[in-house]
Length: 167
Image 1: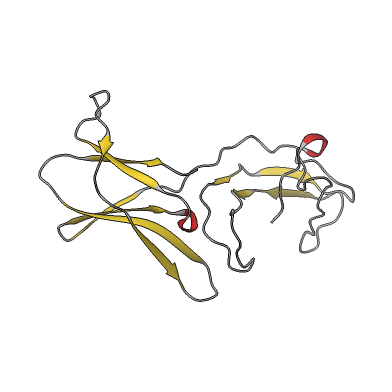
Image 2 (image 1 turned 90 degrees about the vertical axis):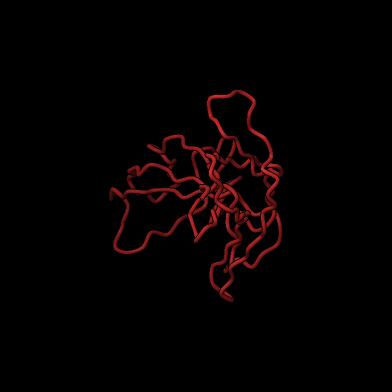
């Protein structure tokens, strides 16, 4: 993991100075390599580096090409990309609808909103459903935390969206 550079170091990996990245294999100066960057928002609290919490926001760059050098090389070819929240998962379990989305390590809180029609302006309202924090941990391996809402399936149509309360 490495932070993005800023100011005169924008376009490099590193804050005040470039961070050397050792490339595996038989790659040498002058070789062309292809990269794709995975970016996650840093976790704001303490954690064990070998077992980081799930990200609140993440993004994936397009694949781009660089020519390896023995000096700091700017990330020429890297196109702008955005960070996004993990997707909302909706599935049916028996006679229940289960909605699940990332809690970003339990530090991100949302309101689950609902509406019966997407064509009526101002019709979104709080669903009144209380999400439950579900943490999955397998010891020292990767872990995640999700907000989960279970709701009985009703006869009417319902649309859901989540609204971030704590960025």
